[in-house]
Length: 190
Length: 153
Image (cartoon, rainbow over all chains, first blue to last red; front, side):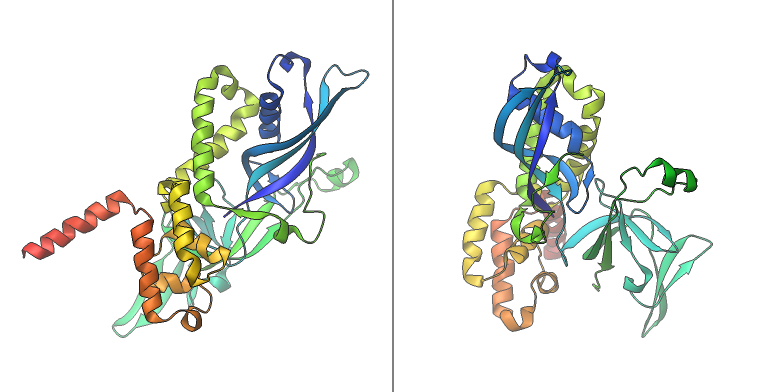
């Protein structure tokens, strides 16, 4: 579920934090920058694990703050392919069933990956699995809040960095896309 | 953002990062929470809100999984016991995260389990998991109560 990613970055410590221990100030800045954020092609950053190397700090003309290059390891949520996870159903839509894990929301079960045959009930906005047994047909509703086990099939990273002014003007609507989405398959259990 | 991941720039991303056991993440977050409790004013500043949110949600999620009851010693002991079964790291990770109690669950987590493990080995695996990894105390209490009820009648 989680991986440790080694990263390098230059951290800026403002002068009013010079009285603090360098490590502590670094850790706070790194967490401020990365915690609960998605790094493109890496995953959802959770928290700092440790700092492996601190290079020399520099002060540049015009800015009273110190700049330090830091090598550190960060705990990142990045499930591997085919990993089994549990989550709760958030809501259903035409695109499929949206599942949440609390700390990570953008998990989607596309209609093809649901147990077949499945149909979308427009009135109740819920996906239904109709299965036939010897006794007759049964309907299993994908209700909100239900716990569900799924297997990771694919992951999609979208670069949501701000675009330049020319593009922004034409793109008036500005659709909000999730930077990191997991496409998953429901697990068939009896 | 000037930060870059050493590995996302190469195609070998997956081979360089290594799986971090969920139990370790749980312990890390608990320790961090304790540390921040003593910190006082800094944790409420605007910048720390993201860290607070992700810590709270992740702890909430993990506290309901078997990983929350696995100390580093338990994980180490479990992995040592698992060595003869020759499972991949990913498979052992999933066994730790989910603590399967039935053969069906084991077959989901272990690839080609019919070819690699005989029925006795699967039973042995279930027993090892049950012995080494602590279960959910509430679940076990409920199971014990229903057993007692059945025994009496």
